[in-house]
Length: 367
Image (tube, rainbow, N blue to C red; front, side, top):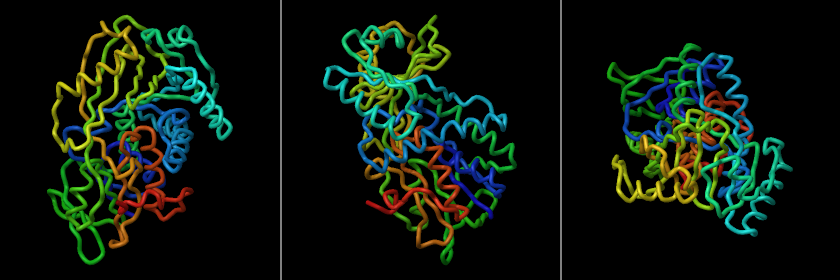
């Protein structure tokens, strides 16, 4: 079968890679838009503690976290290069004894579902600071050894590299959709392409693209401003990811880089600007958690537009009005956690294989 995938972010690239692994004929199309969420993001793969209360989203995140190792092993076998994935553990911070107990019980309960959670420990402030030295003085933490981090840009580059090495075709341009009867076609600068499956996975730009063939989805861009700091002279490789009692997060990479994330600016549209309030928010939140980074070098603040669906769950499924159209987008703030696994499910949809998960909650036409 021939497949055209529009969008080479984490989801589109993962879908393309999984399809070429199956020997499929795939064209991956990508436009150079400012503010791609994957390129800006640094990801935490740790659904074992935190704010995912929706059971469908948690089941998806759990399956994704468990599947990550197999994906990284495949990319390593394909000599795809660095992915930025590393199992460094996670610290879920607590400000009170009751918060600490609730986090611990949650992690222990989830460890009964899967051993990928790893070790679960309650830590004093001193113990937590031994693991993450810049940490604040007035918190305790639950440590979960199964937490991991990932560099979204590196992982996507590795997926695309492996895809091309396996014979996939990469087309770098902005395209349009056209329809005739019950099929969707892709117009490029060189003409119109047809395919057995057209997969729209263009992140926050998917809505505008689908409107060209009269398909309406509930999707909006949400701006995130993400700070990248340099902790000079620090060996940050084994610092765990940090999950405070908020929507913000913190993680370190092995080159002294520490990331503070991120604002969640609804109603932003595609306004690609750093704002005084956004920068202040992300720095204030980060330094409140890790005041030891006050003198770190502020190297970069990145902007990404998250594709936000109506309930923070992905939009994934076939569009019944067309015989060859699949929508895969709307990963919201969970893109780097669930993107590779949603891509695996999308690839199965494309070749009519059974998907071992009920996709009804992810109906792309829900409102």
